[in-house]
Image (cartoon, rainbow, N blue to C red):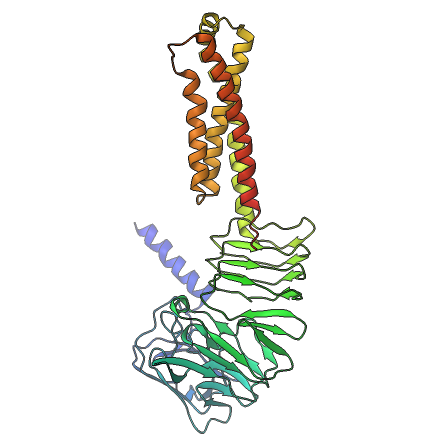
Length: 459
């Protein structure tokens, strides 16, 4: 017992020496010291009013990090917050600050009042957005409410003069209308955050003023080179990308709720995490001229079964996990098919040799011919079992194929073995005919299965 306690103490000491004591704490804030000043990394208080200090240990607080009042902070949940105030020393904030604090909702939806000291020379809140003096939108924290047809719509207008919109700066799930300025020069790859609330909302309308770099068609943002940058739609099952689009850029459909997409043959590249976590996506019509599909392009698209991709296309690791799952299922099912099948045939032949010999004598059929019928019959039965397993493992949604395979299974095994009051010779003929029909039906069903499974094209 003493030895175990000593070992535990030694482990704790070693851990402390290797990893340190963690981030220092000042009041309700975790922070880190840098040469340029203090960085606030987290708020660990209980609220409801949060006031970020101007200085810690005699150094100015100059930055607030990503996990500050962020629901993605797995160390603790965000408490109920009523107000947040930032000091005049603050020079910058993490992109997407306060846009998803709890349950996918940001400061406005949660009723949190956000202020920046009026004497701050670096940051300001204008029309509900946190901007710096260089024309960058860091976070949208307050919306305009517009009355239309007795309904209140939440609207956000990015102010004119804005050049850059940073990652997760705008929570699309909270908006019905979004206006982008003509001055916009750079749209970050994940400028728009899609919250879980998004799927329960009506359609989102996005508008852009006369902009030389970007255009919007059907709530999809394109640049002047016809690259698809971002899908801003909502509650739209089928999306058809127009001809002429040359690429789908990184995170373009990240967390979208689309169910099917048509990718025209003009598209040659699909970027990093382009459709990542699009959990409702089921069908993809892939470009026939696709050249590159980058990492996690279709990651976590759980309802997607298979994507037909030409052989000379570069597909990065984990770019299309559904195809990897399909390959594993196929290999698994075929491994179940060939090895056990040979053993199964030998087993049945040994057990049924005497019985089939008797039945062949009674039916006046040569033993060799009757044994060939038996082999075909049990081959058909085995194919039925394997096909049924393949369908259940790979394509659970095609219930009619499961029913069809089950009927074939029953037909292949039971009918040829039913004792009959008619002549034994006619029973053997029936067995032969039913077995041949079953074998051909299995082959047809198998190819239909593969055709459906590997051809997820939409019109």
